[in-house]
Length: 363
Image (cartoon, rainbow, N blue to C red):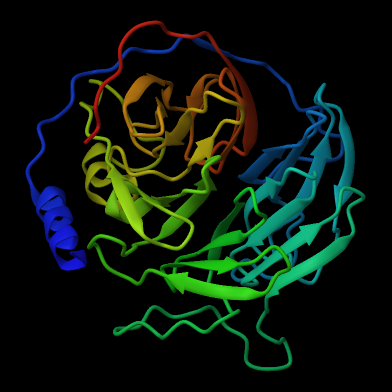
C-alpha cells in the first residue's frame, strides 16, 4: 500500500501543470517608520521577525558586526514594543550569535533564535535569559571553518545541525527544526528537548529537500516546510509522513525587476524562481490562513491550508509596500503582517484589507 501511494504521489508531482490565472490583489498599507530604532543604531539585514502575546516585536538582524569582512559575526536580537518603541537588546555578545537566520516566539512567550552561522538554536525565556540550547558551535580552539557542500552529502548526526534555518512546535510542545542548507532534513525533539527523530534528505523527490528554509505548524500538528530550492511547500504529519505538496505557478507581472540581478537570472536560479518559498507563516485562531513569499517577483501569497491562493500583495523594490528578499514573516492575525527584509535592511508592518471572493487552486 505504501509503494502504491508513493507511486501515485510521484506521478502527480511529475505531471505537467497549467499555469494558474492571476489571483486578486489584496489592498494593503505599510506603516511608515513603525520601528523606532535608537538614534545611534541602524538595523542590518532583516533576517527574522516575530511577535509575542503582548504585541512586542522581536527583530533578529545581521547587525552588531564584529570581525573581518569575511567570516564576521553578524547577529543582534532587538525587542520593540507594540507601538514600535525600542525596548532592549537581548543576548548581546552571546556565544551562539554568529549569523542571524530566524526568530520565533512560542505560546508561552519564550523567544527562539536560529543561527545559521553557529549551527545553534537558542531558547530564551521572556526575561531574555537562555534556558535551552540545541546544537553546538564549532570550537574556536579548533580549525573552525564554514561547512563545505560535498557530494555525496555528509551524513547528518543526531543533535547536531549544519546551517539550520527555522523552528516550530505542535500543541504537545514537540519541537521541529529545519536543518537546513547542508543536512536538508527536519529534526524532531519532544517538549523536554529529548531527541526523537529526523526525516528528509537532499533531493527533489517527495519528502526530500533542497534548502528547507522555513517551517511552521498548524493546530492539527501538521508541519509545513518551505522547500525553497525545490519551489514548493511540503506538508507532513508530526511523524514525518508526507501529506501533500503546495506549488505556486502564477504569471509574473510585466515590468517587475528584481532588486538585485537581472530578470533572467532571477527567474532561473532555484532560490529566485517565481513561487519559490522563502517563508511560511500560519495565523492563529479558528480560521487560519497561510502566508508565504518569494524573492522574485517579490510577492506575498495568502493561501488556505490546502494551498488555494486567496490573494497576493506587493512586489520587489525598495519603496514602502515593496520588498527586498523577505526572509521571515510574522502573522499574528490574518490582516497584520510583519516582514523582515534582507536587501532593504528593515522590517515593515503591513495592514491588509480583506478581499472577498473565490480562490485559485495551486495543485
